[in-house]
Image (cartoon, rainbow, N blue to C red; front, side, top):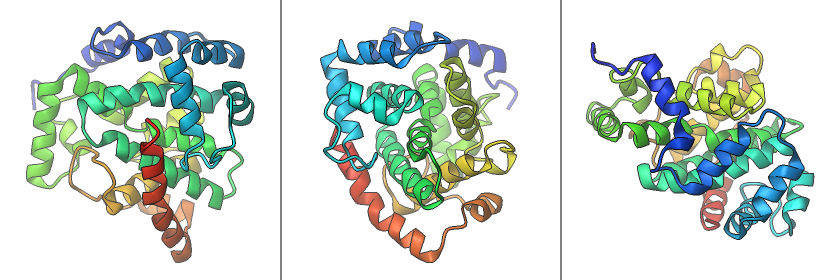
Length: 278
């Protein structure tokens, strides 16, 4: 399609997210804070503690089944100490993006929460040291969709309509209208917000996990979580397709039949519990 939105225009508009009047005030404020290269836990803690609604959302989220600390974390300082800077940054974005997702694409938040639960379970089964970091990456993996929908709602709705009508993925349909897909858009944002390379990589390549050379396990986990949640029918990711699992990613995660049964049985309850928190 010759009139696709070009890369430069798209990136400029996407990276101006914190200047958009349509973006929730909390997300704008958090976005500006996260752009500081050396933000620390203390400053993040103050930002959360000064906003009672944000404090409540963060504590409900970390105490939900999505994060594996049911009912055990009573304060923001306790949460930051247990989970660390990257997870708290991701949770901050997650709970502030919730409102944006609800406004732009019904069901996207539920899909993202399902992926959060699945990713944590897989990361634990694979013995990753920081399963919460992978789960927070899954929470944010589709942030690019919400931003594209916000900035180009008519065009994106057309892409979703085509994807549903033709039985293709929204990822494939996006390429007809934009010079970058939602994974690349999400990658621009998390880079701008100074997230660690492992999270940036997993968001960038969650549809092409074989391209992730430095963080193959984390990227494979986000990819497989996405497919499992779609197969389970939790939420809405912009199309009606359950894509095939990338063979390289499947080989990397190497889940047994018992692992898959366990993840699928925990998925619905965990996603529902997390969804009830916000």
